[in-house]
Image (cartoon, one colour):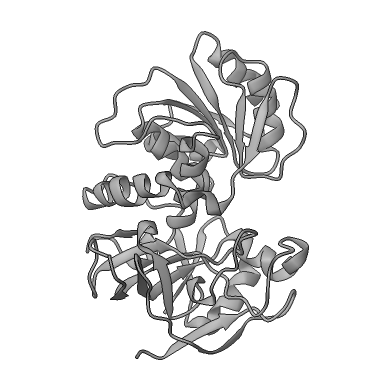
Length: 339
């Protein structure tokens, strides 16, 4: 049996402690990934600092981390898509759930992580672990907001989408979630209106956006409302500081679906507008299978998906994770630790 090591969060505000951890064999429809690269997300350092203030149900010690990439070490009963040695990326369960206690074995900041097979995708030899690892959380969050029936409920993505002749607004197009949301919405046949800094306009348009506006501009909301006139508007996805307020205004003053899928804490919406916050647990649904089993493997294999934001390798080994958490927010790139 392999020897496992993990970076444990032993309490709120405490530094991570790297020590031996139990290796857990996969259960039915699970597999174990031997991690070669792990990525840091904003929620990781927020959980470290705030602990139960942010997640009252959080228990310690806890293993943070959701974005992982590496090789399949072992498969559980019923797993047919993978075999030992396959190169993969996957979504760990480092964010605690209010519904059920997360097993420590499912956190990402360790050498071996147990993952549900429905949240894993094979990656081609041309895609490095360090580049693949930036995708899982952003992709899964975007997919929940776009496709779940109680969110925007968009058509599924495909390699050859039929134009939907409908328009979606994605506020925060150059964020990790926004980058994935633009690609997904475009692959579903929707026209995308997004926001970014002017230096990123060409980038977000290369992902599939038709219109890009400066999120700092005082006229951005008004400009988007203007361009939406006469279009079949299917709602908005709010990502980043100030995005929810902007999307509320756009949605309330535009014809079409009055719904905002939010990555941000909710505030009271205007009359006639509905909103709902996206939670990571939501991906464990038919949407997860659609994205991770049906869509992502195809586009990765054909080189038709952009794994972004750009990764920045900030260290090697689990001991480097704590330093990476301290750097979170300093770089616009996704911080990655190799193992």
